[in-house]
Length: 267
Image 1 (cartoon, rainbow, N blue to C red):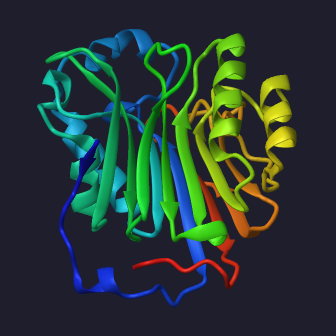
Image 2: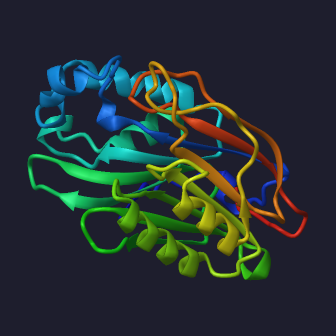
């Protein structure tokens, strides 16, 4: 895990705002995709550097300015294909996030560093990385904001393509968040909310999915909603939407929360 260690005067303050804007986005390692055929014609970009990647990251950074907490999937943590740029760190600097973290889930040495990333304008109390079963390169990041029973727990993840494996991974996440009062689970789940495994997870974990009829995949003609932000019933959702920002093959999804008075967050 890497942490951007920059500290500002705001680190010592308690946030006075009672709303949070959260975003989940699979950035496809900075590759722009406009059609299914480009998975073949642009497939080499998953292995080799290309000049458009930095431009795409800059475009993503512009979009990220308006959020407080951002979970990222399919980032590279510094390898040949990214020009040895840690994408999470780069986006944090470009978008002005003082706190950033990454989790390498599939280390392919110089060729690729497949990772999850997280950007935060709020200093978390604790951050932990979790390798999801069966240990084949998928992971989850757990961030806690505040202490005690009123702490806000945010879990950001990227799940497997296999339904059987996703079921295992969601059960792991359910045990990880336990019976915490204020929970947000978000990421690329590779499954719709009406799938058996996601529906079962939502019910057993006591979560809800804010109403939204917009799909997230593929970005150029969305027909499936496989990116999700799920919240515990104690959290009030003010707004949820899919962001019309077709750069990677996924669209970002955003939720705005009103925080209960008991949650105290360090700025």
